[in-house]
Length: 314
Image 1 (tube, rainbow, N blue to C red):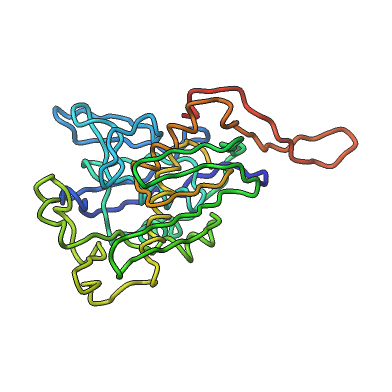
Image 2: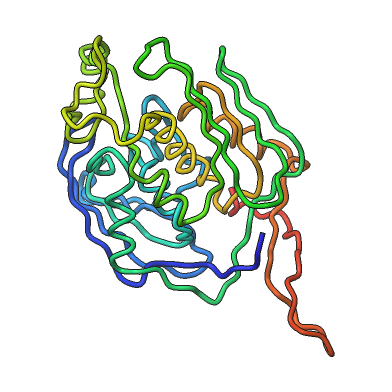
């Protein structure tokens, strides 16, 4: 873990598209934001011309069925934030205000690749404030049926060890261990697409999901395998996408995590439960400030300081 400054975008980014679940067109602008402001969503185009500012934090999560939702339907919400959040976390962007005029973040091609390309197109700039981290101090475990997850201390950054196990030979059992860095994220994770089973489509439609899904934004699985003409981007694209989602969901910690996340048969709900359990006890974590200090007669060296408890971190 090295001392590093917070970052934001060099210039605004405009992205348009449709939501994978609602299918509604949406326009979204990612604005540079001041240091220590974190990631926020400005939900516009609400009834009576109202707007709502939502912090991208786990305490704002209201639903985790097939996607991650912050806010609420009555006063304004934003759904399917995980791919965009993953791209920001994967590239180390700390502060951004996302202005969005619809209820769901655009799905684009079902991965985070378009967001990564857009961010690369404008560039990322350092800010004066030093980055803070959520450092895991002791193991924390959550379970949900056969699915389980654990956060453990790990001092060399953020490592994800994700395993999935589907009762279909197209996917089967896949596992990947991934150390998060911007280069590795761009190379190994960003292009992994969301996936779904054709046998579930009608049931999902009745529940209000997948109305904007297509072969352009989803890896569709039929009884005989992948339906998409181009096939998969990696043989293990499925577990790579689960890592992509986990990075996005866990970024709702409010600061980069220093620790190891291990999950088995996880998803948005389990990722959210992990953050709830981690922050449930102050003994589980510390907010670490790596700002360098200058000592008289010595070269500048990083100083690790544990910040006092701040509700803003949550």
